[in-house]
Length: 256
Image 1: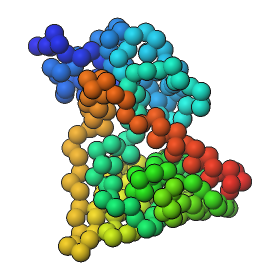
Image 2 (image 1 turned 135 degrees about the vertical axis):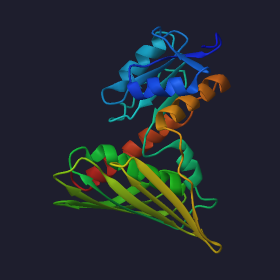
Image 3 (image 1 turned 45 degrees about the vertical axis):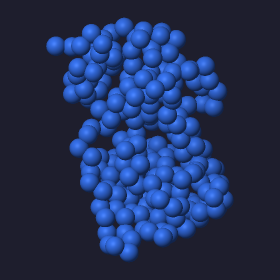
């Protein structure tokens, strides 16, 4: 039985409908956007759908796997919590991976399809941001057939090096990142498997984070519910824009 106090959720995405069922009786599926958390599909111009949901009275929005970053002037009038679900850059895994102290160097090595490069490259630089505690500014970049090299640093002065190999076939990307400092943090993700693995190495040995059993959709809904109750917005949109800007700078400097 659904509780009368359950938070209403609007979604047409099967994975999110399943997540609603898992979170019952805290949430319930509805069709009316007013007073509800609305899930929008990130494969299209989702910022228009998010703004429309806010205008219709939604109390929060979840963006499922955004393919594009919004224009700079989009969502300026949206004042409700906006949770952006990035399967390869989950908030809970990012919290586990963030080092206690900023590393002295971050190195990323990624490969994936040339088609959609900017989309999956955002997750590469996003993980660099998580490890460094801030977005990187790209100073140098070069590109050749099938390869992209970039170097820069964070506002705290942490050097960041990114190597990307692209291919004409295949639909999935993969990445391995290392943050080197007082401890070594290793992050690897595989788009095809949908997996993200995190490990830390210090004087006491190697510590591998236990993979989360919670689905990305359930996590996104829980974060949205928490933000609505707390009356505060997460930094997801700012982070997405920072990552998109870093990728844009990288491709521009490389001459793409």
